[in-house]
Amino acid sequence: MASLGQIIFWSIISIIIILAGAIALIIGFGISGRHSITVTTLTSAGNIGEDGILSCTFEPDIKLSDIVIQWLKEGVIGLVHEFKEGKDDLSDQDEMFRGRTAVFADQVIGGNASLRLKNVQLSDAGTYKCYIITSKGKGNANLEYKTGAFSIPEVNVDYNASSESLRCEAPRWFPQPTVVWASQVDQGANFSEVSNTSFELNSENVTMKVVSVLYNVTINNTYSCMIENNIAKATGDIKVTDSEIKRRSHLQLLNSKASLGVSSFFAISWVLLPLSPYLMLK
Ligand SMILES: *[C@@H]1O[C@H](CO)[C@@H](O)[C@H](O)[C@H]1NC(C)=O
Ligand SMILES: *[C@@H]1O[C@H](CO)[C@@H](O)[C@H](O)[C@H]1NC(C)=O
Ligand SMILES: *[C@@H]1O[C@H](CO)[C@@H](O)[C@H](O)[C@H]1NC(C)=O
Ligand SMILES: *[C@@H]1O[C@H](CO)[C@@H](O)[C@H](O)[C@H]1NC(C)=O
Ligand SMILES: *[C@@H]1O[C@H](CO)[C@@H](O)[C@H](O)[C@H]1NC(C)=O
Ligand SMILES: *[C@@H]1O[C@H](CO)[C@@H](O)[C@H](O)[C@H]1NC(C)=O
Ligand SMILES: *[C@@H]1O[C@H](CO)[C@@H](O)[C@H](O)[C@H]1NC(C)=O
Image 1 (tube, rainbow, N blue to C red):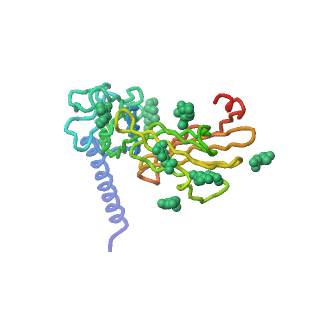
Image 2 (image 1 turned 30 degrees about the vertical axis):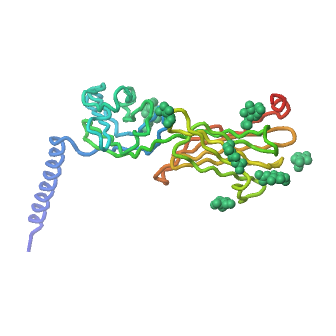
């Protein structure tokens, strides 16, 4: 039978072994240095011809000189962008991205590795990798970038038409969207027989202008023109009463990961237009 002394002795030995193991593990990490750090990207969409942002954040590091940011694109041999030792290093940059990329250099220290992409092209769509090295370790995350064209529609009374009509116009969409009209009074009504939608190719031969006319509309009703493709959904609302025209519109980017649901809203409040001067203009 073990004496009390033996139990205490072996307990102390065990504690020493456990502590030594823990210390060795900590030192081991210290020497090998690099464990993984958290890198987070946000799926987004680019509007052709405009500037876009590929969003990426990482656990911040206090030493800027130790931070390396590499942006890569699947199927592209060169780098999209590289930032290290506090500045851009574009020696390995792929031709396709020359002069079109920038990181927010003053935000890197705070863990912002987002990339600004100038003049977004249809061909910029694809899988990107945001790869980060800091003094704490390294990590990466992928980002699915979609490109297309989307714009806010404007709905107006179509004074040219023979019947009371509304005209919904949006300057740039790609791929070709669907256009659906709805009204507050006749909810669930199908307006496809009393509307006419056309798509007109813009001069760069990619994006198209969307025009949809809704015939035989009634006063005191709110009509919505909804334009949607796989990238964005936009709505233009109009209400014509005896004394005024009210309009509003918004645009929402559709995320492939529905749970994240990033959306941008523009002009969510009603815009009041006095009716009479508006009519006099025409
Ligand atoms: C990174 O910085 C840019 C420029 O200030 C900003 O627009 C962007 O929202 C930032 N991204 C994140 C994820 O904080
Ligand atoms: C309305 O009529 C004017 C003049 O007749 C014409 O210039 C304009 O293109 C027409 N607008 C529409 C939307 O048909
Ligand atoms: C509306 O009716 C048209 C045919 O008249 C049909 O093709 C379309 O699918 C209908 N839309 C809805 C939303 O029911
Ligand atoms: C609009 O209403 C008029 C009169 O009720 C009708 O003759 C015409 O066919 C309607 N137009 C459409 C596009 O339904
Ligand atoms: C629809 O609009 C197009 C172009 O504006 C026009 O050519 C066509 O005749 C219209 N169709 C109907 C059914 O109104
Ligand atoms: C668009 O297509 C037309 C006809 O196919 C062509 O004449 C024109 O040069 C093209 N424009 C551009 C910017 O590619
Ligand atoms: C529209 O609504 C106003 C106020 O609610 C009412 O005075 C007017 O008579 C209505 N007009 C029509 C055509 O229903």
